[in-house]
Amino acid sequence: MNIGILGGTGKEGSGLAYRWALAGHNVTIGSRDAARAAASAAELNQLLNGKATVRGGDNGAAADADVIVLTVPFAAQLASAESVATKLAGKIFVDVTVPLAPPKVDRVQLPNGESAVVALQRKLGPQVKVVSAFQNVSATHLKEPGHTVDCDVLVCGDDAAAREVVVGLAHDAGLNAWHAGVLANSIAAEALTSVLIAINKRYKVAGSGIRITGVPAK
Ligand SMILES: NC(=O)c1ccc[n+]([C@@H]2O[C@H](COP(=O)([O-])OP(=O)(O)OC[C@H]3O[C@@H](n4cnc5c(N)ncnc54)[C@H](OP(=O)(O)O)[C@@H]3O)[C@@H](O)[C@H]2O)c1
Image (cartoon, rainbow, N blue to C red; front, side, top):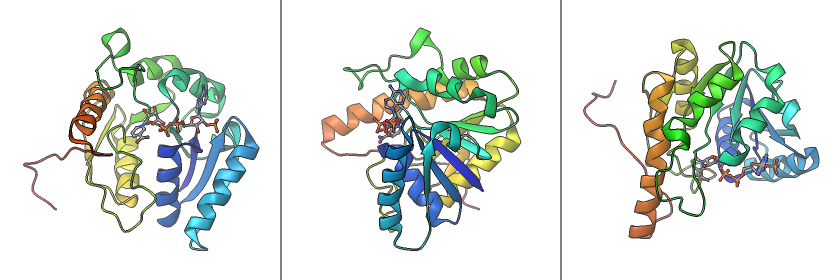
């Protein structure tokens, strides 16, 4: 699959890029600055050691992909998506951003009390298949291919086929993932991240996670 990651120079985006490239996907890292993306891609390629090649470009180039993933700080969520909006019609747009409100990121503070990704879908319009995922997955171990990330992925979206694609991408990244219902349900995943940050602080760990229980393994 052709995957473009807006803000892919950051911790979460580059970690996902690494895992998807290892799984055989064609990944382009996007940035506000194409040179920064190229440098970030070069670093990943060194880590990939010839097993795969990641490309770098500006966010516009990353948005030429079939599946576009948004991994920027919440303050930049809307502007980053809108900057490539003309390229998103009919495509799957995976929002990973968490509406954290620094400095108290260990406290749930959802903007206007609603899911930030629902607000984003409203802005982008129904022609964009917005899916929410990966908010609870810490970047800490993503670039260690042998490491089993101890966190499930809740995948929310109104388009079931688009959700299925993202569940598959999570599996390709070595993660356990669940269809977690409509996009509005993403409010739970978005809020959970602050709970996990509070747990990280209290128990002095880098990346606590969540597990869904009670569903028999297939
Ligand atoms: N880190 C984690 O463990 C983790 C886990 C789950 C979810 N998340 C969520 O994933 C998102 C990204 O997290 P991160 O830790 O990867 O963030 P980050 O490293 O701080 O930033 C990611 C990228 O966003 C771009 N960016 C930064 N400020 C921007 C701005 N004002 N306007 C446009 N682009 C900007 C930068 O790319 P360029 O400068 O190259 O454009 C940066 O490399 C956040 O919403 C976060 O809450 C993070």
